[in-house]
Length: 401
Image (cartoon, rainbow, N blue to C red):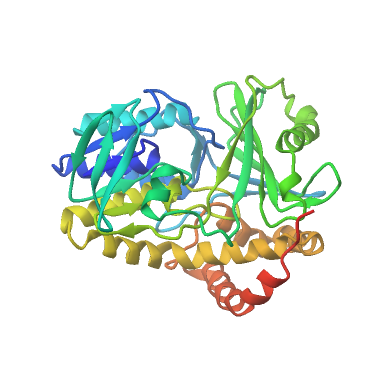
């Protein structure tokens, strides 16, 4: 097996396969210990995946819940206890988290090539392997785990769906005496410098190391998205939370990144795409580490079971697990791109305890095709209703300036 990309998804695939005795070569274009721009938050779903992967998480800062802020309304909720996911998440800066995972892949027996960019070798529509560092490598399956879609994805036809929404986010680190808090904080009522409500949120993710990861993210469905200044939006948010968090100056220059939320293709003869490369990002919170871990393990498990059928089975099984929820999130993003509907939606999202519990489940990636109870029922109903309304939602989407 060949893996392109050494983030959480690629590392998870490599760990799983190498531990089963599969010969794995992973190509990471960055150097060992490289950073990845991210909010650094791990949901309870991500913690469950790390437990499944048998990865030690003792170095992560434990998080017990989420504080949601919408205007003057605040709700502080604990992560729920369920049969599937633990009642805690974590914050783990990606420079440390990714290094921890890639080291686990090396320990498992994977051959990791740092500082090496790999490109798929395609012949007659089938991926035969990769070319990297002046060498050619062949394998029955190549796993695309290169994050937001780029050159390798373009070659394999795994580009973002152009008519689907995507996100942009920016983060920085700052010192705070509240660094050891065990709740994430999400401000759902952001506005840009023109006063336009932003479909997205600002976050404070305490890292437990003297710092907090502070950031903001926005969806492409908002009016004026093309002109949105992320640095300005981050500075405005930092000014809002500075006194309450006794926030210091940014420790390093803020860095932005794109959040893919769809993919034209995620499999083909001889290959699969996992994690961000497959568009597995929750449109409602920009989170995708948990989906990356799960899809990476699934790809390896299916390859181990049967290399020939693995790509098609993978596409079917990840579709059954993720597609309905992610599709609903993308459609809902068209609704909240309208300022009036966004304001109304926020009042509902945190207005009652029952609604806040559903919002918590959405923000924690705790919902999929297997989710029981009210949250699962609401999302299944939303998927059906928004499916009917999808043509109208697209025709009436907020227009950019």
